[in-house]
Image (tube, rainbow, N blue to C red):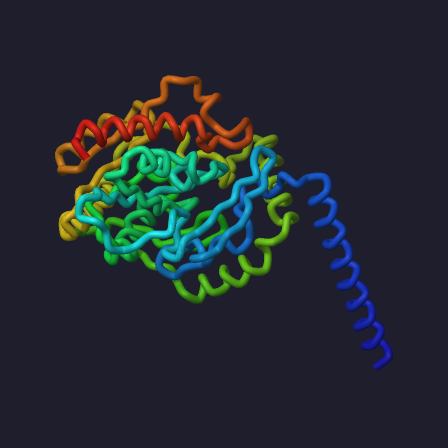
Length: 338
């Protein structure tokens, strides 16, 4: 009995020591490595979702702190970083729903300087609803449109195509330490949705709620990635561009775009692709979209790309890049007579 009590006391002492060590480590990281959370949005802005993997929390506001910026993100009642919106619209307004990832979301950029806001502020006959969610691939963009877009009276839907949204994100069912749905093509050539296992998602939700406010887990993750790079091992850092090489158009890309086009046709909406793609492969996507009756807006930058991103360690578009994109979209809309 005495031996059991002694072991129990030793175990309690060990646990207390580990807890103290973790608290001290968390404090040291916050003091000396505050940038460990640069690529992580403030806790509570995301919530785990069984259909989409994750989504933004309706009505939530939080400031995103990084070495480059302090920007307030405000999520509206519909669950998107956008202005307060009414589902019904004036018949004279051309309403566009745009889906995308953190680039379209406006990572690190104030609301008014995002290209979606920039265009809407300068063209009163157009509404551009920003429905982007950081980390989404094209598959989640389309599922979000299927799920939430059906209740919105819109004239056009735009999906963002990039190496990130078309690359590894659509190939996996686990991204950024979260489960997500994915599409596969079965033996009959049919696009099939593989949904998220709810039990796994419940565990993910619990861990996210528990760990997301802290700095230490993200510091450890970055440290491990740094060690892998130094050793020449492959890494999958969430802040790096997914699929950084050439992008070839595959059958899965075609099936996803066809699925989105069919939904848009059923809803009486025009579908457009907003593409920021490497030259290799871009022509294939453009030709496919033209053949399938999908509009194609291509983002073209003539400036040095180093002047268009937030910083050396954050390659999201800055305010200048957003303005250049806004000018291109505004010109395209004017040419269409919208």
